[in-house]
Length: 238
Image 1 (spheres, rainbow, N blue to C red):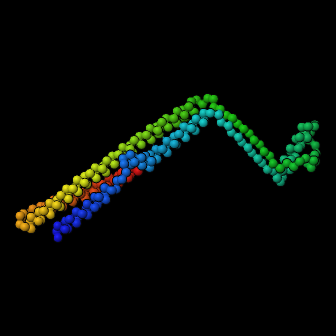
Image 2: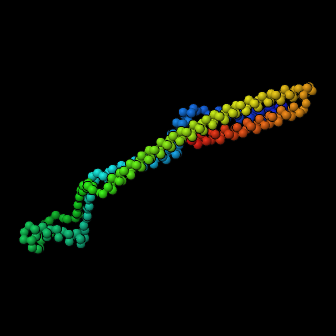
Image 3: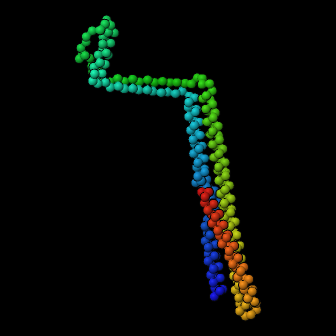
């Protein structure tokens, strides 16, 4: 019965180890590709790089010609409407004839209800005391710095992903070694138990083997925990 219990526990541990080994189903290249595509640090560096590019573009535009267009429209009604009509047509009468005020009949003129104005301005910076040039140089330096940070981030993520991947492989290999050692001890216990039953060995041999099995099982459980931690670290790179 004791042998059966030990064998059952060993089988459970072996099943856990086998399931852990099945978790890693991608290659190192695939793991790195996932990290480069989804890592949040790289995404942040890319956003910072795009912001730096837009700042440089804006600085260069300020150095070139600027075209602006303004338009205004005014609608007149009530007292202001009649006053504006009177002023407008009186000025025309004065300008064309004697330039003296005279009474005019507003009904002889078309209605005046609105006023519109448009203006177009083209400005070119000629001399700014080096201010615009300094802005362009600063923005260009910012873009170069963002490019460098982005590349360094990508290389760091690749290194961390590869390191985490190899840690997982190392834990898998260690699990195999620990599992094989546990299997050998279980077989040894079976043989020792048979020898003890026929009186060939002492009880101390059986107890010693069981202690070794317990230590080996504890070591395997520790490696299983290390494997799960290594997998979590690897997934964090994605």
